Length: 187
Image 1 (spheres, helix red, strand yellow):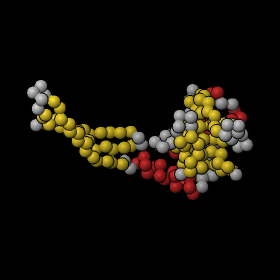
Image 2 (cartoon, one colour):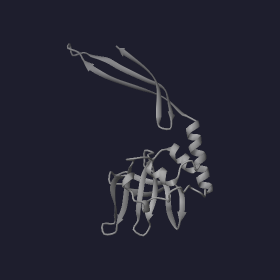
Image 3 (tube, helix red, strand yellow):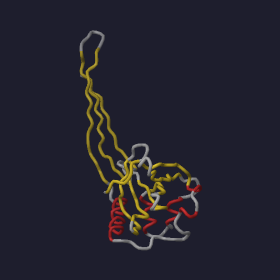
């Protein structure tokens, strides 16, 4: 993944996949260090102006499968929050403005009814990874044990241990389901 920009909240974004490229990436997916994804549209390559629209894997798949237009994937309904980013050549940094998708002008959006047409082999592989991620859960098993002494009135230390065992953690696209067992041991 290539580093792209760092947002004002110190959130570093990386280019995950380029969907449309013509001299420069015009439509692409980027994500931050914790996996939050954005659909990014370049609205002016000379001024380096972009629209960043938070997006989930289902919407990305719908876009790639031509079930939703490029415009709809950016707007995602009324009052959808997006970030408008423009490069400031004087300060040599990006400036951001949080707006709703309703505030975007028609000339800042892909054409009405335009679908993602050409799928490169990279985009096809990306689509397969997203589908696999949705279908195949990732399971982690681990145990957390915390032990600490505590003081009683007679100044004797007794051992106190708290055991928290997390049996199984299954992740389905950032949704967690947990099984939990706890036990307390007093010495």
